[in-house]
Amino acid sequence: MGTRFFISAIPFFDSEMAVHAYRMMTHDGDKLLGAAEDFRMLGGELLAPELELVKKIGVEPFSGSHDFFLGLTKYQLLIGMPLNMRIPPENLVCVIDKDTLGDNAAFAKMGILKRSGYQMALDGLPDAISLDTASKFFDFVLLSCISGSFAEDMKAIQPHVSNTRLVITDVPDMESFNKLAGMKNVLLSGDF
Image 1 (cartoon, rainbow, N blue to C red):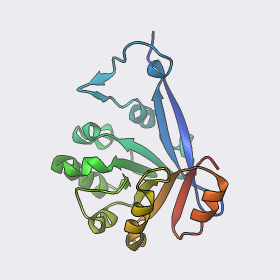
Image 2 (cartoon, rainbow, N blue to C red):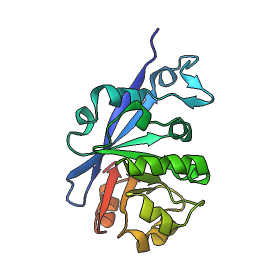
Image 3 (tube, rainbow, N blue to C red):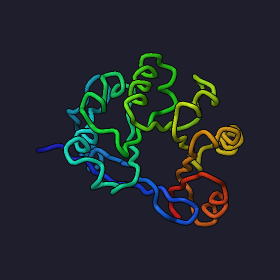
Image 4 (cartoon, helix red, strand yellow):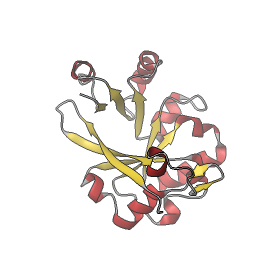
């Protein structure tokens, strides 16, 4: 039986409800459907079927001419993805989890991606580096609206939004969307 995984492209909207970007979300089909083992694991990290798919067909089928956000694990960074796969940087935004920033080798690989033309997005606020450094390096910062620290994170990021674009995820409803949409330079996604 072949390995299955499911893909969805989650839209990021501006305050006028215009789509500006999409984020690829995947779920391993075998795990989703309750099958026993996923043999694509290597060293505890899922290999990159989503990167392999993007390499094969590009980002255009998922996002058109919009930016396309794609998460990278620390392991994927360390082995040189997506650069060594020769995935072109146009419209591709590499999403990095905030906990990856504490690893000097991974941070060095992020620098290589940035210098190669890839846009970079930070998922969450960093502990390992300052917000000032993060806002100068990352093109986007993603914050979850349902995070327990959302209010504090929003206060902390406000002085830095002129350097980076804020993406607020998990917006639960239209009322919340309308409140958050009043901010400048923000993208929103969720159940509104």
